[in-house]
Length: 636
Image 1 (cartoon, rainbow, N blue to C red):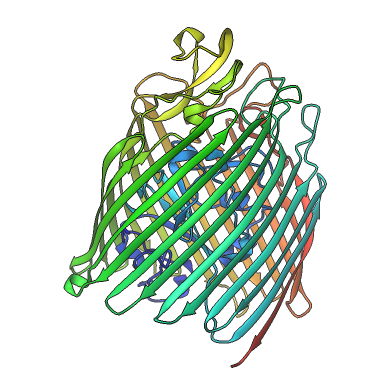
Image 2: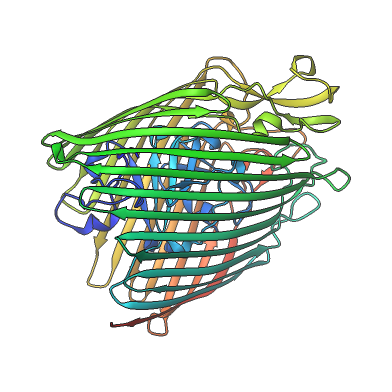
């Protein structure tokens, strides 16, 4: 797959040498040093992830530079990921190289069926990566890499985390790891429940359960096999998650299962990868008790097979492969549909001159909706001592999901709400970026990038009069409707600066920090008030500071957003024009560092805010807990 993407790691920031070691984004993609990628990439390692204050993975990610997490509810109820503006469907989420974007609606892409305890690292690719991963990788990619390391010693580990807090919060996690020279096993359970804050006539409750397992093993002939499965169940108050109606008292239940398998082999001349993934989702949405529930069942099946040939010429690697995925929905609201996709890709990574690294890639897709599509990508990186200059240009593509095409299409009567559009065309874009990376003599890195995305046929929801609706058979003339439309051309420009560092303050004390500022401006050719495009922040500032030693740890994370203000005369909750959040956590190690007690405060300043019109977020949230980490090692 496009070798363009193999990335840097923060753990080497201590080294006095400015040459960072190679990092593999996943064992399915070529190895590459940071200065060779031509891209702006963020890497968050397991140790850092554990210290960021939050109750769910999406809450943690909103403090990572360059990501906008638009949250509807607390503790993982529902969130949308946005990178470099645009819409949340334009961000592709991967687990160990396999796509997991939900075909029913992009709102469920944040339902990542992985415990943070089993994550090895998260890699965030900013900008288009469609020639690598296929559709939906327009604004960026969030790649979750799980633990599958083989240990030189036989090792067992038991982790437990019990937390209690205001709003009736109850959180429990228990996980077990076992690893040796030839195999690794992870099993984990997480339960996250809260009564929630007071809302209009109810409370914003959340009940979620996650069960996850991951097993990898070396087998004969230098092959490695990995299998993983997960069950994610959520039940939450969805009041005004999707509408601004005063009659909205919605409740939603979502249950999804995930299966994944990989078979890989590495030799001196070539690497071989076979990836398989499947996801099944059940969604039950009740707008109010007197209205029949929307009952949706969807399935995603994915196969990705590739070979990486190692060449002596210019230290080159040539990747070739193909990808097939199939989407299925069975719904009383949206109907029954199937959607197929095939992609064939090739890429060449090489170094024609000293310090100059090139990756040229091309992908040819066939999609049931938009038929054939040609997707090229070029990444350039030039390193001069401690400065790297880089640039990238490539195409992006995204087809409509089942909700955008068929929402409310199968109902007998729809008096108001969002209406799908089967005639939608696929979004296409040209993505460009240039930037520089500065590796300072001290353990600090600075990454600066300017980018632009010229997009045609962007899909969004637009308020539309009854007489302008393309299909009126189940609508009423007095209804208020938002139609899924291609909103002509949208040009998005922006700049981002990311800075991170790690410092040894004393023999036992370490400071890690990162901060990032992102500025985005999107201009539509037509003066259309689109729902999601108008919700994007034009300024995002994320920071995270962690100081730790043998006694414990203190972490503070901050988020600032600025964007167009939206209000409604019907509800008392508008979208905040600007707001700043502060989350803090303090851990005290006990029992010979095998356990820690901690205090966590989210929204320290008790800011009243909303990321979506009508979806009020919690104020100050206090919680405390205890965490055990019991580990045993045995020599062979």
